[in-house]
Image 1 (cartoon, rainbow, N blue to C red):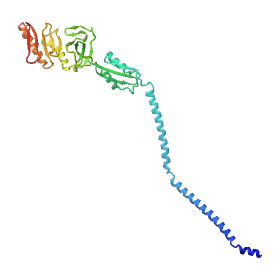
Image 2 (spheres, rainbow, N blue to C red; image 1 turned 90 degrees about the horizontal axis):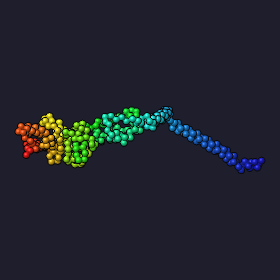
Image 3 (cartoon, helix red, strand yellow; image 1 turned 135 degrees about the horizontal axis):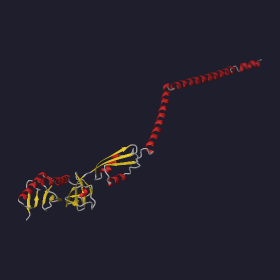
Image 4 (cartoon, rainbow, N blue to C red; image 1 turned 90 degrees about the vertical axis):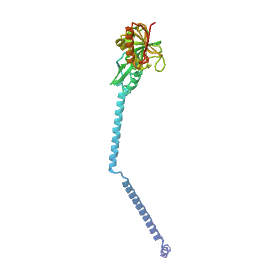
Length: 312
């Protein structure tokens, strides 16, 4: 009994200490649970705060729908591109040439390799420029005729004068463009014109150079006023002066010279005052005929001051 009392008296603090420890542990557990619940509640609030609005889901669906439509469009475009480029649907299979039978034009078309090209990528302006560079072409149009043809229409230059030099005889149009050269032996001179040129007037050029001082050749340029003068003389002298069978020549010093069948010459010089010069020639010829004179030279180069010399 005394021992128990002694035990209860000697360790009265042990029981309260154990009870206090249990209470501390329970308090700690409670605090931990409370903190856990608090953390979970905060996390839930955060999740709720970051939750996407209801309309964002619809935006996402619309985005996928747009991507799907874009994919279909790309597939369709790819198919169309293959149909137009990879297949032979628009491949040129025929070239139609109208307006000329020129070998030079046909050769130029062949060099451009139009057959087999894709009509979508064929540039008509480039083809037309190549053909327009030919001296014999005045105008050209190139048209794509779907789905497999190209139509080329050429307007050729029309010669008005045959220009004879030491290098050959050349056809010249009204603009002074040297179109082409007449093949040797194509015709003989007959009353001032070559039969093979469609009776074009011909002039013998003793100079034989173009405006740039270079020898005459297809593609060269002559003075269009000089070309028109030759045309006018060939057309008007037979009717206004009753001259036939004459020939025309050109020199650097005397200009255009008319040579009659009888052998006398009329020097016209340049194109200036051509009407006056033709009238003076007619008056001088009438004067010589009235006096039964034979002329040797008539110089009309100075306009209103003509000069003539009779045969001795």
